[in-house]
Length: 300
Image (cartoon, rainbow, N blue to C red):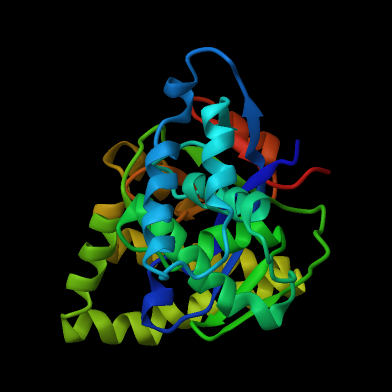
């Protein structure tokens, strides 16, 4: 069965709300796929029957933005269909996004082509689907899980596929905090902070340019500039996003800022989940952070 990968926001956490670019990519380390079981399937189906009923209500009101074969979906659920996923929930890596992508992919009768001219329509469709799980959704997570390409989000209205050739002299990695969290509360903290004019001016003058420059450096694989920009982003986040850095990880965050071989930044909304790191020496970093689970993003 086809696998639907999770997603990773590399750059643009929070700042995309205030005008920065963002860069997101599929995260094939975690994925889900459709499977069938004939025993205790109510336990593994979790919210799927309620999701199908929700979609049916929208369809009956002529409000559903795509033509889903909900009767077929419910029939398969009754026979034991479930979404088998190892994507961690509460980590911001697209557990519900992958599910929505899978529902659309299998049960939509008139799927759109996976081309850039359809991305904004996809976003609207996926936002409607994923809102069942989050109350509101931008639709971006399911889009990335469905397209399975690295996407540059230049604005709410401009999304494009980008390509890059990974160099071998550095590594991006994820550090697992083992702390599930919800995105909403940390977004609200950020928005409240932005009401302070001094804070917002610093964000515009320092943080947003660093994010945009980090994305440009990553896409061009200008590794030295990228390393420096992750340092600048991490420094700003430690100073101005402190509530979003779990207390037990602040010491190693500072160690990274002081070091010349690894740096840490938030990965998504913060508060837990993963931290994103960059290093020129992964083995040394793994030894330095041996008490934590690290995941290499790129195979060598």
